Every structure is written in structure tokens, then in C-alpha cells.
Image: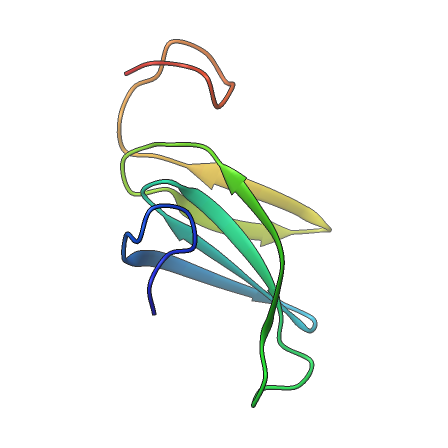
Length: 78
């Protein structure tokens, strides 16, 4: 599967309910997978980072990276 933002390979996927949260080097996307034969992207967020691992817990999405950042925003720099 190719990433929606820059064509990068998706590196991490988390599932919660009928949604798949897909991280890649450009950010992440959220897919409705209620119909597995026809997944539909419902949102994408540009947040460049190294790896961008996704976790979902208690209705919250956590985006982690393996690179230090200047702050906690998606505009931070390594």
C-alpha cells in the first residue's frame, strides 16, 4: 500500500473499531474499513517525521517518531 501524502510506503498500521490508522514518513491517514473490500480514506494529516508509528488507545491517536523534534507540533524540525 502506498502512502497518500508523498507516495511513501506506509510503515505502521493500528486498528480500532472499523478504522485503520496508517502512519508513514509524511504523516498519517485514517481509513474507514467497515467494508473491507472497499476501504475509504476519511482523513489525512501531514506531519513529516522519521517512521511515524501510530498507536490508538481510549479514543486517542498517538504519533511517535524515532527522531528528536524541536517541539510537539507537526511544524517542528529535527
